[in-house]
Image (cartoon, rainbow over all chains, first blue to last red; front, side, top):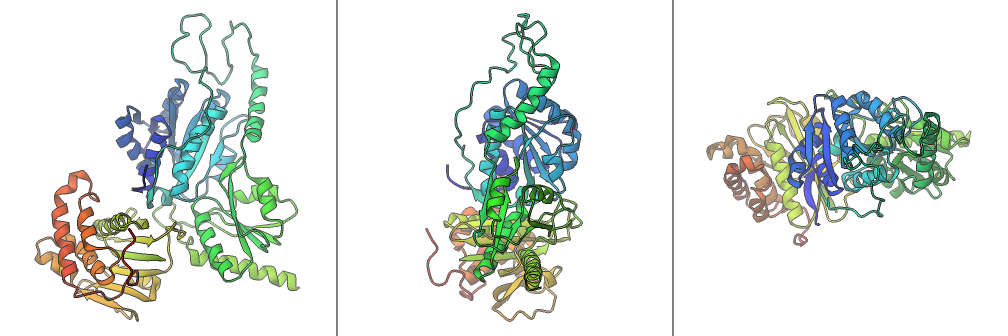
Amino acid sequence: MSAELLEGSEALAKAMISAGCRFFAGYPMTPFTEVLEGMAEHLPEVGGTCVNAESELEAVGMAWGAAAGGARAATGSVGQGLSLMQESIAEMCFARLPLVVLNMARGQGDYFQATRGGGHGDYRTIALAPADLTEAVSLIQQAFYFADKFRNPVLFMGDYYLAHVIEAVDIGPVDFEALPDKDWLLDGSTSGSGTARIISPLMPVKRNAEVFVEYGDYLETSGDKIAAIENGMEPLFESGHCEDADYVVVSYGTPARIIRYAVDQLRSEGVRVGFFRPISLWPFPSAALTEATRTAKAVGVYELNAGQMVDDVRLSLRDKVVESIGGISFDDSGFGIAPELTPARVEARIREEMANLSNEVDA
Amino acid sequence: MEREILLSGIGGQGVQLAARSLAQAAMREGRRVLMFGTYGGMMRGGDTDATVVIGEDSLMTPPVVDRVWGVIAMHHLSWPAVSEKLRSDGFLLLNDKVFQAENSHPGPCLSIGATAIATEAEMPQAGSMVALGAFAAATNIVRLETLLDIAEEVLPSYRSQFAEGNRKAMQLGHDAVSGSICEAWGVAEAVS
């Protein structure tokens, strides 16, 4: 398929449909609304269903039902709406159900929500964060693949920039390795048999099953599943100019695209700076980050919040100087447009940090 | 080579449509494009702008740009911020009479009564499209034929009745400029 000039939100909708998504539910909230509109327009064209739900609670509940029935399903909101979905996201982890959840975030304040979660119990969700639309239309298809592969919800992190940028992108289907049949789905075929399948956060089989699984044992396997994802999935990342870098800037999402641009500019002037971009926020690419910062005297973390991902960077780099160099930046729209996020300001910020670096070395 | 063009005005949606038309035409001519508009919760009369980046290869430029090669200024409302972004050797197209601010741009500049031309043709909303036609004539950033070609596909289907008027507006703007003033791509033809 050739490239089409599309607004980000519509491109995401079309890419989800290319990935086989056939059920989508959500409640409008900018900039998630635009994705919902795209799904409402295009999903019926392929026989799918898009529901404008009464609230985020119903939206995730509907998606849960569709996923249990075997459909590739997705929902989403902005971080505020995802707060309402936390209980269901946690329960779907325990019930082993695939789901893709978009967070078209307003700013980057939802890193903890995405990587730690606000639900109950021992669970983790894979979290993927693209830096631009070209990457996003393929990464969102990978999100469906990971969700099915690990039978676990996957968060996809976008923002206002991603929803509204217009680019020529190819939204054709991306191939991934074959997945096993969904032999667990509730399709009615076992109803009334006395041993009907069950999908529940509490148990994988009914009490009268030949091999019953006790609740405690089932909870313990939830922990095994976290390890299975960590062992079964290479964390995703991008890095550049890190070999011989004195200073490495870590950033994710749209700000990382601006960091990448600023670092390219600085490198062209001979400044020894590199960038590192986690694409999967969980699992976090700790090993790759360690390698990328081998020569760095210090590491700066640029994120549009008061310092969240910086925790994961510090956990990964126990013996490095790691500092938060971003910050909260909001214009009055409330949609997460960041006045501080311009190549010139970012570049100046990096220069400032690197000047301190050489002062410290000189001293 | 990448060319960044900032279109700035006040809402309605004329500036956004002109930007979208420029992006679509550049893509049709085989170039890479990226467009980002801000109009947020602006009401009619609020400031609105759109940036279009056009290049030959994968675009590294982020959606937010600091420095632009060209500006179409339909109104002076956000001129201070806009003029700060315009490269000193960049090309400026001003909407004569409507644009009222002091302009000290040292580079090539064209002042054309885009809104006046549109109003005279009884399409006062089409000022941005007149300006886009003039900008294309002055820079050859895209061909007029391509702009006329894509006039319908950039509109939602329920607005397709305006395609003909927009074509006329772009043609009028193009005809109002006697020749190229600041070539966007040197003398080379558009890539195929």
